[in-house]
Length: 132
Image (cartoon, rainbow, N blue to C red):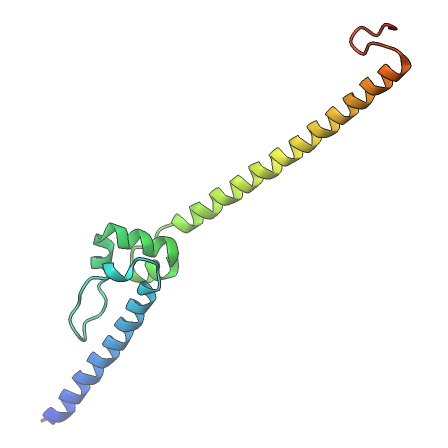
């Protein structure tokens, strides 16, 4: 027969370990701006319920956006962070492409302006190519 005191200590140690892990998870969630007030209540010694967090769409989206590794650990990860990174890369590529086009047009306008100035100094109308 096992000693009841040993069983009680074993159960208490397991509850304490679960509580420590749950508090660490809750602290990580609370580090997300605005998420602390949305953490679902739980009993002492019970693990954090990933499904309860997943049912709260606001909290779920906050965790997915700010801590994708935690979202995956809790069982509701998505590719939101990856899509946002791809969209940011696409926006950056558009910005670079537009900057290159703007520079090409600036050079083209500078060359046209130089040609008009030279034509004017030579006494020609740059539109009709005739002398004044």
